[in-house]
Image (tube, rainbow, N blue to C red):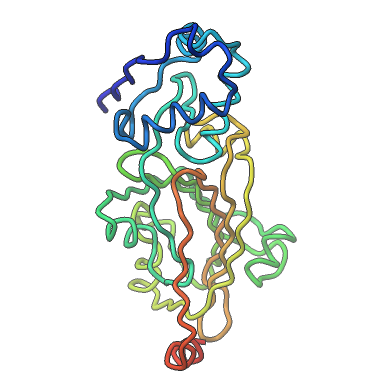
Length: 263
């Protein structure tokens, strides 16, 4: 993978920037990103270079970068520095389409890598999520998902081996939704989705190549079939700068009727 370009260091002279607070530094960097001077994937000047050019202390520089990170304009990559974030993908949780489909629809390149796949005894929490007895066998699948070769999501999936015998013998590097439908006839008719902001824990941050504590989005999804059985239970740990949640709600009479039929 080619090394991303480094941003040109064309910052104000130290005497012009000696009194800049961190928000003005934030605005200066943001203007170069939104104006196209520093396109997506560009590596920013190092904190030391920014410090030397602006004549401000490292804490002020770091505050400006953290502000930009929180807004999703830049991101930190472990042991590499700061980079301009790519455009976010739009995610509509009300649509049944999986990651591979909605990312490709936005002219981006999706990819899935299976990190681990094993059969475990269901803990009390897992049993409740899957609707099985505690101690019953359960599949646990952990996958890394990428957009344009950039890791954006760690997914942890639980499924019931009684419903999907031999599942782990299949390749899991594609659409699990399609695999369950085509091989086992599983059709999801309802989803229960919860989302909340989070700080990425160490094990997930390592897979995403970011530092632990980086802002993220934590999403859980329980998918059920027409009989009310749990098809799969997912935990998703997203980079917060990779996704924009978009929901299209139709409040017209026709739209409400469609929603009732889907339920």
